[in-house]
Length: 114
Ligand code: AMP
Image 1 (cartoon, rainbow, N blue to C red):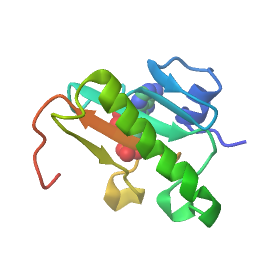
Image 2 (cartoon, rainbow, N blue to C red):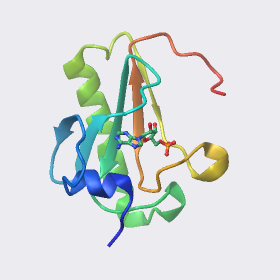
Image 3 (cartoon, rainbow, N blue to C red):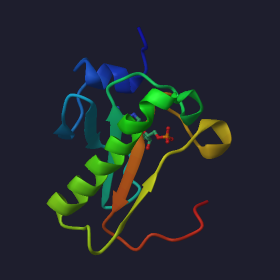
Image 4 (cartoon, protein in one colour):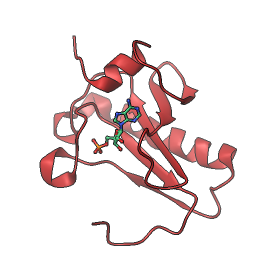
């Protein structure tokens, strides 16, 4: 069984501020927010990194973005704008090895990221 901190959140073994859930995905607030809104959208399926994606995961990854757009609309920042980020491995800044899509909003985000 995979045992990242996000797997523990999926199994409700540790608390999280969950904002959305369906059969395939879970979304919760980042514990160390980098913007006024910082949500992590994760698949319930254990996939460590983008490098581990298989062709059969394409619909699932698309679903993570659909959830992001739905949250943006429901939370009222879709028109103002937002950023989605998925980090991969060390140089990408990935620290939790369960696939996750960052959803950042609530301020004007700068580019390029650090
Ligand atoms: P990454 O660096 O892309 O792997 O992102 C991992 C994110 O998970 C970071 O933004 C952390 O702040 C966040 N994080 C780590 N542990 C928790 C937790 N228990 N609940 C919510 N967010 C977490």
